[in-house]
Image 1: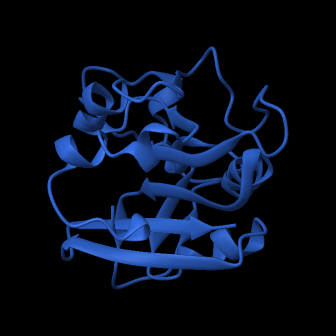
Image 2: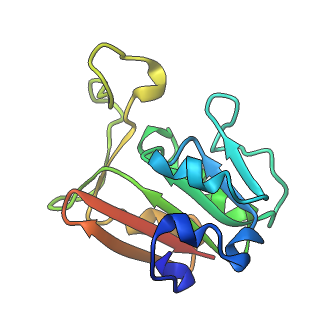
Image 3: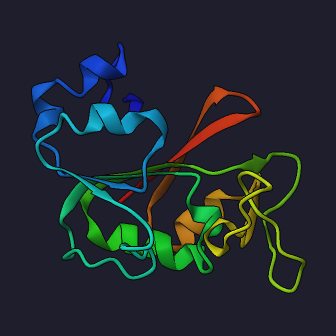
Length: 167
């Protein structure tokens, strides 16, 4: 909402005419936002495993906004996933997302380490494997993927941070 200079509630934000005209891609369900985003006519929900973030089947420059929440850490090649977001965004578009982040250390790949999972310890499915543990330099992958800017928003520091990549 900050990227669109909107102050107010999300339930009202999605009803704004300029927001209603956006083409929005939501990758997996972005928390409790899906219910509201479905009120936007050009909203598309793309869910794993039908959709592969590293090889999305959408044409270049087809969306104004791409959203994902706690997905990127599960992608084996996260820069590739972000570059796909970049590819499908129109110029000036936004990719807004959250990732679990340990703010007092740098990002690390878990390659060669024992598997780590997010979610319930009852469910150790391969799609919950964590490939990247994000730290204070998480913005670097956004720039490496081609974006010109990475904005960081503190919702509830340090437990809740959101990133917005700008094409």
